[in-house]
Image 1 (spheres, helix red, strand yellow):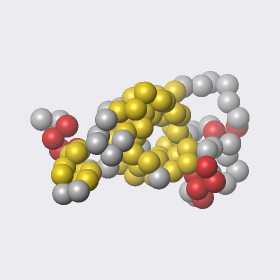
Image 2 (cartoon, helix red, strand yellow):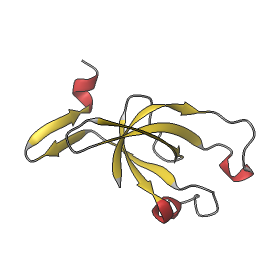
Image 3 (cartoon, helix red, strand yellow):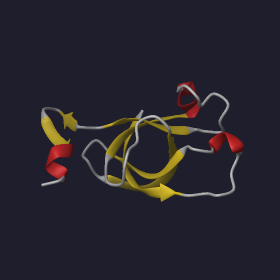
Length: 101
């Protein structure tokens, strides 16, 4: 799993029928120091309801299809959690509550 920040949403009116009703989020991954990486990825969010600017936990590859409902979907990245805090070596690098102050 990897940590990422939700940067936006992806809307598609024409798509595989199995993706109907699945929220697609545009993500940027975050390194162990809390720095946003330049790469973007689209991930499905059909279970947690993450929003723009939230930090999330993302699973990729075959693990993304282990989420109930994703087995038959063409998904290779899925949001599995919204992050509240991240500590690295006893140092807080992210707190959701501090984000909205």
